[in-house]
Image 1 (cartoon, helix red, strand yellow):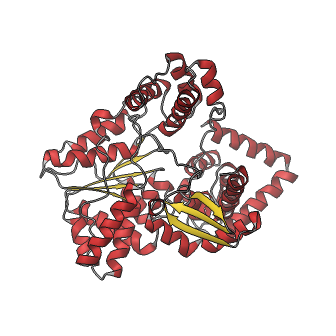
Image 2 (cartoon, rainbow, N blue to C red):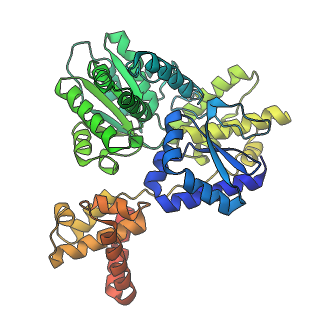
Length: 477
């Protein structure tokens, strides 16, 4: 594919992200890919039928308008990636790596599984969610690489997986959260795979699969059977909870969660952020999730990255005899090429391509050239609204509850407006998202606070110094 369409696609994505906010964009658009441009039509692909339907209903007009402004095209078409053959020369997707160092299953497996499930649903009238989403047999506890960043999460997952049939829940719910590529899915699938070994009925579902099953059940008027399938199991495992959207779907998830936990069944959940930051979910759902064991998987340290790289090189060597990477090159990649397994996978794919296509031996000099655009400086600290609330409350001697309350006394209004201003300046959250985090306020209230503090900062030197001091406290926390 020529550079111009790819550059146009990057511009479209940046504009869309700016318009709808980071929260919505990261929930629905990361897996949307440019497939081809021909005859005035842009074809974009997604991995699942559900995602295609949702984007078609909510964003196809906006996508079309953005593409029209960028390249003058008149039509945008959405397809499921497994449903068509990519034309020669089209950009090929790279299979990501999980925390064990193995490539994740091909994206085409999920849509194929969903098509089969849809066919069964059409025949029986009931969506078959009882069998769950497909599992990758390589994602087991034995292949999971341990380090300081994931040891607690691994121990908690293993404890849940090894619970005997009929025993009560260990941690309920067990909630794992981490950025992409750090092993959440690996641990969840390992729990699901180990269930049968201990006589437990375990169902592993992605949030998309849960939504698909619920919507299909409503359409086929078999929602009662859908509920019974899920509530009759011993352990429910839900992956990528941040993708759970829609009021009715969230209500059903909450009912299912409560029913399972109240009856002594185990629930395990993973997402890319802690429960308090899942703004799209209702407060009662977030509260129930936070009541269990919440464990964060931190970015990989250099030692763990080296273990993952060694495992991945071993897997590649089986497919490509003679492929080997010197220790100094592995150390260079571990230090400079990202914080998760998928970043490492991309770097190794570059080395493999250069080695196989040019017959050049892999050296440190060659590696520096091959991965130079993957090398990036240390990522800035991720600031959370919770951190801002805590620091501002402490600084002004008020409580977090005061800031989130409806009180309008001067000693509360000022910290509240400053906290809103800092949330807008230091995080990627949109005004509506910030409003929800501040007691469910309207985005216009946040905008008013931001503009007021901006005005004070520009006219009052003492206020400007105060804001700078708070920024340092938040960033150094």
